[in-house]
Image 1 (cartoon, rainbow, N blue to C red):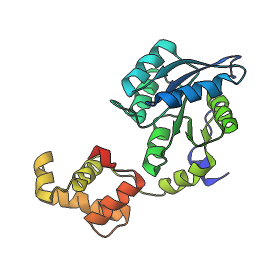
Image 2: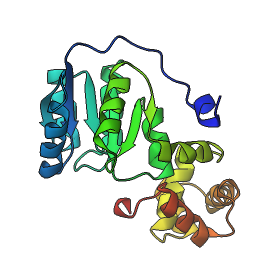
Image 3: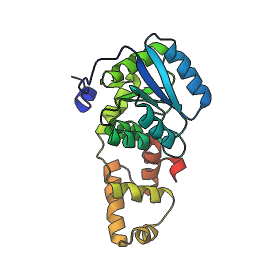
Length: 226
């Protein structure tokens, strides 16, 4: 068994692929949705039953349509794909979600898999791989693009950051001092200093600047969130 397989074992098959697979496409780019609809509906036994262009609309459309598979982009306005996936999975525990994205940062890959997403593929994939991925996810099986598997295995080797450490890290990225961070959380400077020291150890970096650069590169902190 591969390291990745051991880390993320295949999900149990939830049911057989139905005679006609109903797909919901969620992406904020109209041209991409049109192209995806064309690709999917050219395959016998598949139909696109709806589209969504942002996070809240994705959740609403999923509730209304309850498709066999949701194709989900990560970067959408109002509510990102990860948040949408979490909300859908909290309401529909058997939801089968396939992320189709241009991004493959380590942290986002781990977050979507932890949210219960079954598949993660990139937008530059070919049509055969897309349809294979949809079929697998529809059957309740995990499908990860080959180029993403190594990142998953490597990401699991890092010690996870706590929610408070992540909050401190984001404030460090905004340039706040220990005293300013302490004021935000109403804690002592020494407590903030302990959080920062734990961050440096877990991330295996020498200082605050390197910690921020490292986390931006890994996708733990995103520029648009600062």
